[in-house]
Length: 311
Image 1 (cartoon, rainbow, N blue to C red):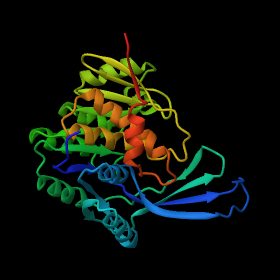
Image 2 (tube, rainbow, N blue to C red):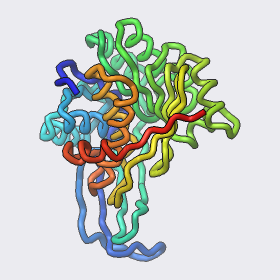
Image 3 (cartoon, rainbow, N blue to C red):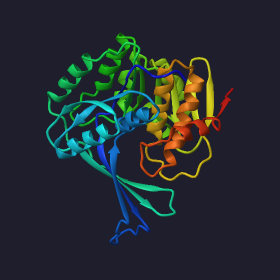
């Protein structure tokens, strides 16, 4: 891929301080003592931005932060050389925790919600966005909206990006996604459960085609460690991820988004971009800390992704 020169603008409005607690065994209803604790950065958009940086890109993370936790988050972003533009809000940036049990590939997530935005917080966010150069930019939008944000928040951002000639990769469900589709995101990345909950019914391919009719240029359906599906106006593909021994799969969906964004920023075609995204998703799962991948792993795993055309 070509070198990256233009920043990738990563929207992650609900970042968090992420604590990973490791246990020899977790017993429900009992006192469980962690044998190791790791503190890092969390939240879908923040993870996407971090992995864009690890892949050699130049991310700018856009979001809301507050309090001592917000200051800690920014110090950790500085340490990882991840650029950011934040709107400061009242209250504390949230703390989320991942519980890991030795020998168990499944993890447990304890997730705090972000404090609600005040009426002027979103207005400040839109002023920030209007100050950005979005021409030819790739703009990943990830995660649910914080309480207090307008339901058409993502639509407002997509409109700005579309009008300036940028491209949106959106990973979000529900009405905020549906309202954004008229502004033609280049790809909607969504998991199978969220897709059906958003579009209704039980037909994944039918839901994809309906989403295309509403304005999406393409849809990528992820299904955890299973194969993914890609649909646009001219083709349908099944994507088989590499077979790996996952350590912590949390953040792998965000790694897919980061891989897509970086590849699209270099001007590659969609199929190589999809392969890069799937390889990044697998590479993230090889590490205990979510939102972390090793480029050498991505290079190796890229050759293990299979694409099969569907009838």
